[in-house]
Amino acid sequence: MAGGITDTGAQFSPAIGMIYIFNLIVGTGALTMPGAFHSAGWLFSLITIIILGFMSYLTATFVIESMAAANVKLKLNRTQDSSPDCEERKALISDQHSISSTTLMYDDATCVPTDNLSAITERVEMGQMASMFFNKVGVNCFYLCLVIYLYGDLAIYAAAVPKSVRLVMCTYQLPNGTACNVTVGDEDQCWPGVPSVSRMDAYRIAVGAFGLLLGPFVFFNVQKTKYLQLTTTFIRWLAFSMMIVLAVIRLANGQGEGHPKVVDISGVPNLFGVCVYSFMCHHSLPSLVAPIKKKAKIYKLLFGDYSLISVFYLLLSFTAIYSFNSLKDLYTLNFLPDRCDTEDTSITNIKFIQYFIVLFPVFALSTNFPIIGITLRNNLKTLFYKRHRPYPWIVDRIVFPLVTILPPFAVAFGTNQVDLLVGITGSYAGAGIQYIIPAMLVLFSRRNIVETVGRETRNVHRSPFRHIVWIIFVMIWAVLCIVFVTVNHIINGIQ
Image (cartoon, rainbow, N blue to C red; front, top):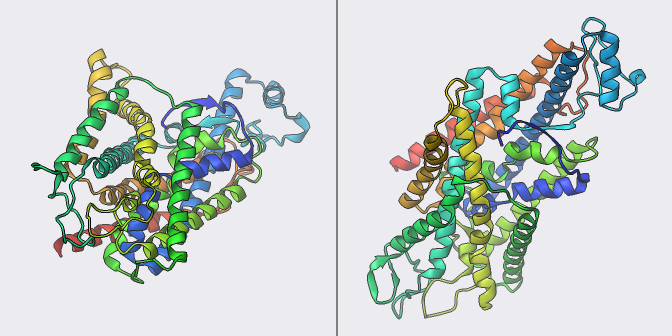
């Protein structure tokens, strides 16, 4: 994520690019959306998803514009270094970018092009953009925010996977005569005949096993293969399709049990964090936008993506809140009935579907955990790196991997409330990455290009929200949201 400049790699069509972005955004957050939707009330949640989806789209356009500005700066620096003469520079630029010299407009004072070089032909990650446009303090703040977000991401994974495993692993049934609407709690025993092991103990055993299995990958370098990505995508959409179809069938048969509230202010902080987290793609956007072949309509396609994702979240959430009387923090956990023998509470009697949906987070999240862990490790190294003092081998290979994996698993050992982890991660670090950093990047990139090239330079990928008022609005929105969420957390904590 914080890598340097590379070429775009294998290119693909705009349609494929939008599919990749769709798959990137719709992930863990979608599994916590129905629970957050239910807790905040259906009307307030409906409005919130639409507003936060728009805000995420707005700042995504800021990231793309900043990428284009970074491409301008890179190309100008390269041509200025290689050819000091004005006429030679014009010829070199035309040759390098296959552009006829007659189609380029040049600034007479600086002898640099004022058009076309803003085409995104090189991938520039957010970390590199921060290094190009921010000062040292700004760069450190960027990496700190990204590191905190990635820690939250890993903690969510480290809790979600074991919690799903625990539901299948524990076989204890409620005593005869106990109503099925009595929820099995963390303090209840996990296995019949073993009263000393509670469900929370079993969850922590699963956390430990998950850490021992996947934690070692952070000590090495691994890459997500194309086939692994395709397999994960297929499993994800099969699971989501099953959840939506089963809920729709239940509602069509008049078996819906849900009676959601219209508005519940107490659920707002968690809903905000979940929505920010669920629309997050900004930190990985450069890797997916740069390889798209034709980018002329990138903002229209991106808007279509965000609109489709918003509709998907609403469909998933509305079918959930009207199908179930109560919702787990991970929606998949609703598809396996509580352990009771008085009645069947399952949405389906097909065991394969029940266990496939419940174990879906195990399949999908486990493949991503090493990738995110390695990304966090590399960003930690960048944050503390000093050129005059290289890292010793033990610090590089042992200390940084340990510092990467120990805090998330410590958090997971302490709590299995996935919705809380998602809410906090999205409300704070997520808001920084999704709102504050893109706004600052586009502000400083515009200033930098004006200083380097001149006011006549045209960025072909300039955001539709080009007025400075939009940047100010995003900053005020981010601050107000963080303050509002913090105050509500404090009030709810006191109550």
